Image 1 (cartoon, rainbow, N blue to C red):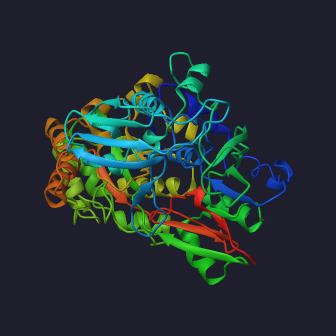
Image 2: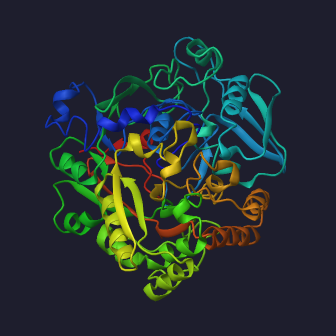
Image 3: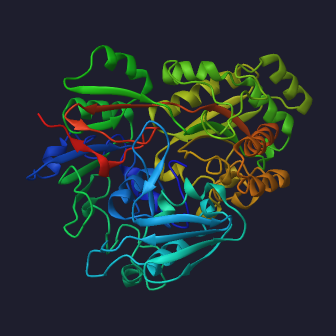
Length: 523
């Protein structure tokens, strides 16, 4: 998810509220004045959020996951390639013994820093079981330990997404049990205070809303990473990031889609521009429990009033394609088309509103305060006005936005009406659907959408090995989402990247950076 997300039972992300359009850069201070110069090769990258947790069981953003991949080891990892794939990392061997059992053997000699010894099967068991509340583990039952390096992951029922979701992603990160219990005796959240690392890099320093500094781990026994240091600066707005790149403050950044043509025509010196297809998904959610939106006819009026191509032209200069659901092209379960035409239809929208017997309706649209999100919200505002709905746009900083629909964070979810969402995806449809089950209402299901049939299909879909049969279940799930009137799917916006030709960037097919694999290009 975006920016998401797991076990947020705290207000950690509230700390990011002061980052605004670039932390130190917004204050007019070049990054070079804030982070000291260092000997050796240094990679300077931009993130669109500040990190607030390096705890795999209590993370907030997928950008935090990008950093964790540098600090911890996993059994497997994503390959840097144009096609999705995975390969062994901390595992010497891993095999599917039967539909519900996966046996692994760890490599010997991977050490934790701080004198916590080698990674072992007990650490893996501890790490996995503390992340079990995260939906991506599905029907995980437990981890059996066979010896110091060997264990078996046991599921209650078959779970197809295991190879793409938990193992190579955040839930597969292996922590030292002893190190975690040193800072949290009950094994609970440790936030930004990890005490042991097992990856190629260590956390050297972090200053909230200013920078994160990673340095090489001297105890790392694997392949030597390409850079001595990785410096990460939080810059929320893409336009601010583009200026930072042009000033020489960062070497790698995502840029806005409406800047692609300009930079391709006239790129900065020694610069490469790439536009990567995305599995991320953007949609407008409608809170079905709000009194103004309880009538499905009102929700359908909103759906039909929205012209998606108009939105994409305004927000992304026509560089983004219309989405048909939460599941992107190339992923199992991608639908060919939506039930409501992308262009909508104002006459149909007005008819639904008339059927509801509603007039002079006022609604709110909550969104993040970046330029693309506010543009989308403003276009939707104008489109709704064409059927007599007056909408007010509430653009919010990340600290405020990411707790809007979370019941444990207060009562603001009761006032939520329309909310613009943009979440990160992964190459398995479970990740694009697991957040919308009934048990996620009040957590990440901010639409408060409930469907017993959807929940049943979700449980069944993760057990089906045949991709064609599995896809049919996800088609129906997305139909149910759309039929509820709680979703208007917008886009899987591409990810344009700007980077120096002096570095060899390594990414997943969707542009997600794999910093460990970045290398300098020899002159």
